[in-house]
Length: 85
Image (cartoon, rainbow, N blue to C red; front, top):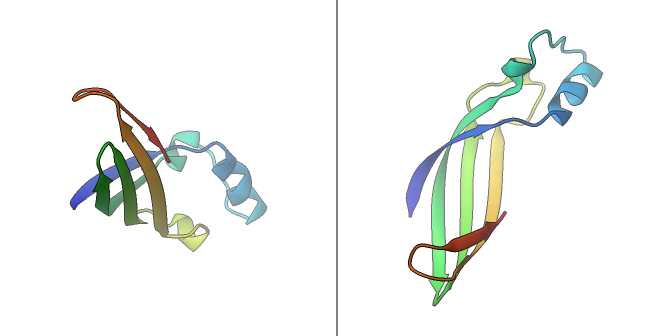
């Protein structure tokens, strides 16, 4: 179990917000910050991770505030691993 911080940028959010009537003058305002709680189920070298969190900005409530992320993790060695989310 754990906690995390998120920082994400998705260019498609500019178009979504424009379609909803929110004027975006600075694309750097599209960065979304959030916090999450994480749980990982480990099965030998495989891991299944669930993140549940909230986005701290609301852009005038035009976008959803909650987020979910599912990850699949495979460990190759003690220091090398890969994630798919």
